[in-house]
Length: 451
Image: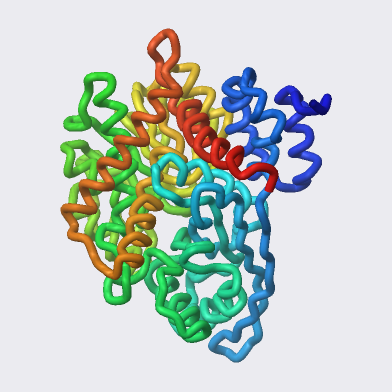
């Protein structure tokens, strides 16, 4: 056996940093997984010999392309698009497309890496991928968004397919954008296949896909609380974000008897001591989607609330917290504040919203902490169910999908507990999720040999 088959974590991470210079988000994601995996694989020679973790941390391929489009003033605009196909050992690549100015290769590599483990946790046959462009749909007309999406898909179509790579929506990519991209794919290929998920119900979409990520995060939170003999009813919740994930997480918390205190966007957060109930959630949904307004307008509609410009909501005392906005929004000091204010559980609705320092604060405080790869897997789970419905040429009822989503989230919780429970009874959900996801992918890779 080669002498470099066994290297310690620090040496492994040095290699990752050298190979991925200037990609901090990706390096952070690999570090977060590797620090748990290394202990698990210490006595498992095959994983070392076949360099499994090293291979998972190197995407199968990264496709980068130019996206040219014309705005309403006849100006030619040029963006950059990517698709990162990280690993397809257990199924076709699966992961969202993100349109946002912050999109970089590093961000997409981190998301595709995380997606690999998240998809494995669902128990569905899906590999990990992610894509996007540094295009900002905010402030653009429908025609501008359409022209961009059509140009984007004109490049992407040759790399995706129902049995190859099935993208979905993400930040900046909702039903409108999915519709434009699917229309262009169908136009170019002359095929009507399940190449995208998050489609409209009129052309192969699935019921409850919109609600799935937010609902799933709360189902996972509910499972964590139940494991400790607690329930969500009567608890206060602080939620960040005000988009699809955040509003549906707020909706499910409210349905289960909890009280939502905050929502936010990039300009700041609103705090409503009276609680953000269903009527208010419906107003936020309409305001953000139909009117494309800002969360600060909430206080004009509901004067009992306050708006805090340029701040995140983690200073508001609560029982549970759900970060549902974006990566690295919850810092170490924010985590310490939440713990000091009596927060007992955190479930990530976004992808890697808590920094490594924040994660360690929660772990050291022994509070319940669910990482995004486990807690926000509900969205991709229902995307997987949409793929199944497309293959069968049928549509399942809401009740069936709700039950399947609930069962999948409970199954993810059980797998996290199996691999994350310590000798003292504390459940390290980060460790449990990392090991459970890694083991499924790694064992499939071993079965394929060196490919």
